[in-house]
Picture 1 (tube, rainbow, N blue to C red):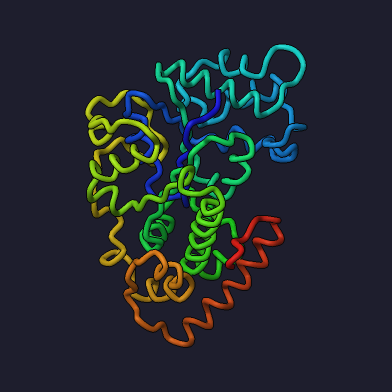
Picture 2 (tube, rainbow, N blue to C red):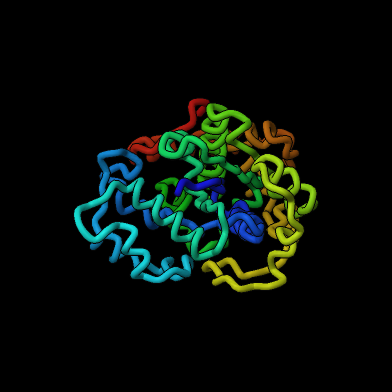
Amino acid sequence: MDPFVFIVGCARSGTTLLQRMLDAHPLLAIMPEMHWITSPFKKGRWFAHRCVVQAEAVRRLTEHEMFPQLEISADDFVRCAGAGKPVRCGKFLGKLFALYSQARGKPLVGSKTPAYVRRLGTLHTLWPAVRFVHLIRDGRAVCLSVLNWDHAARAAGRYAAWSEDPVVTTALWWRRKVKLGQEGGRRLGSELYYELRYESLVRQPAAECAKLCAFLGLPYDEAMVRFHDSRQRIDSPGHPWLPIMPGLRNWRTQMPLEDIERFEAAAGDLLDELSYPRAVREPRSQVLAHASRIRVLFTQDTCSRRELLPESW
């Protein structure tokens, strides 16, 4: 079974909230993050035809800390890989989507995997009809969240520049993720790619969900904004099951002005493009020079990891 939609975006941008809202739709089941499933197959380029997976490797995945969030049995999960010779990773994933759809009793299935914001073209090649919803949040709110996140070391914190300036590093990390998603989305076109702002979603959830459903070709259902009324799902770590709450992570009141200035010095151009107003009209020259130096370190580190950079970097 081919996936219907992927929710992507920079981490800490509200993708878990959007997942729960879409998953509440009676026709659509949204699988939790699946990067932990595909990451072990990176060396074989899991999206390529030559990449195969064996049942034993899949069985080991049932021991992963995120496996319980799938809420399917380990035996059913392993059976997706077959019992004999190895199967192609794409076929395994297709069976997994079908299993999840069946378990949830819904005809359409998707996934919320923010990290796939870098892989829109790859996923389109694997599943040409799949649609992408790119959730974008003000980078200063993202930064505030990352700085208070237990798992920051897995995201912006894994770059060498983090130890010198976590704020500027997070600004560059956010800028890279958003731009990669936008560039990939432009290549796909408006029929397959949709941008949604987190701020609009929490301020006008019904209106934004109705527009999102129109993009997906689904009828709007009020259950999307009442997703928390009948909680039956397992919480993701660090994501308690809460109703829609505007005003979380208010960078204007919770972020020191010097941090705001450094963030805007590093990623102010993208804030401008996205029409997020700056708090510091003109960062000081020494702050701009500092941000430029951290940018060089970040770029060198990214290239050494053989990770993609936006064309406009």
